Length: 232
Image 1 (cartoon, helix red, strand yellow):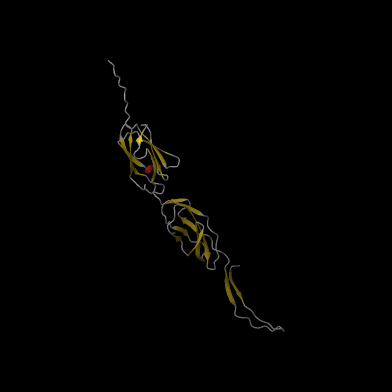
Image 2 (cartoon, rainbow, N blue to C red):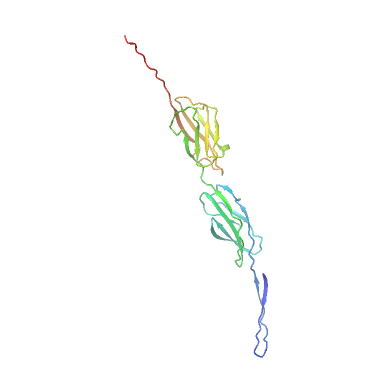
């Protein structure tokens, strides 16, 4: 069992003469690993923009903890007796982490449940527009469509068009990255300037090229009637 154990030895000869016992020696047996720590932050499933997120956890309840092993994206790190860790700059995407405590004789406890976080350190940008910049717009009721590189918070989206045809409505697709702007009919032969004043992604990063501006021109449709010439 765990705890302090003592031992001493005496010698005897062939006729049973027994020597004095040696001075007792003691040793402390510890075969029980410490319990797992409590993960604190970032919370499981968190979406964050910090490319060097600080991981924090509560101390293991065992009194003899000597350090912690961190599994970060499957790689194992011995952190020593600390309760936080900040990795070097990480790539965007899903990252996982779990911890186990160990004691002074290297008994390693069980690992905690695996927590994950989604890291997004790249600001959103505009991938495509309809009409494209410099286009000659055909159908006058055609909507303006803007495709972003990632989902956008609709409440953060602001735009303006000059001259303004009015009656604007915004419709977002299921991914949150494409918005369709319906409007009243454009005027013929007119150049319109569209400005995306603001757009923020799910972690609060603003549009990379805000304000984003492009122009297009509607076609000037002319109708030519035939000329009738009367012969003498």
